[in-house]
Image (cartoon, rainbow, N blue to C red; front, top):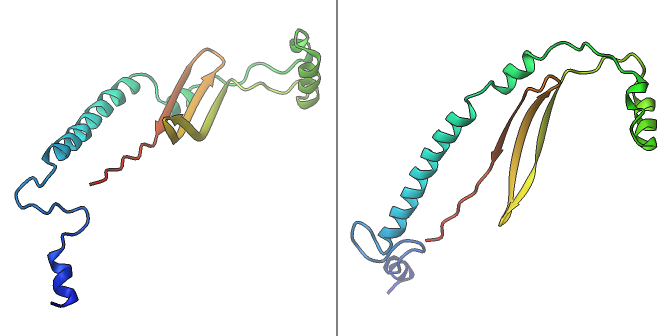
Length: 142
C-alpha cells in the first residue's frame, strides 16, 4: 500500500465519515440555520424600530444656529477647578454650539470582549438620537 492510498482511506478532518444526506450532525445544522434566520428577523424588526425617528443626519442638519455666547458668569456655581479651567479654555463672547455629534468606538464585555461603534447627536433644544453597532463573531467547530 502506498502513502497516497492510506490518505485516501482516512476521512478528512471535519467531514463526517458516514454517508447520507445529513451526516452525523443534522440537528446541529438545523439549529445553526434556525439561529441565522432568527437573527435576520430580529435585525429587521430592530432596524424598523430604530429608524422610526429622525436620522442622525436629519437631526444634525436641522440643529438651530448658535444663538448664545460664552459668559464666564454662567459657571459661577461650579467648583473652583472647573470654573478655572472653563474660563481659561473659552474666550468670553465665543458662540456656544447648539448641537454636538459624538462618535465612539471600543470594546464591550458580554462574556467576551466584542468591538462596537456608536454615534450620537445631542442638541441644546432637547433633541437626541443615537445609533450603535456591535460586531458578533460566531464560530462553529464541526
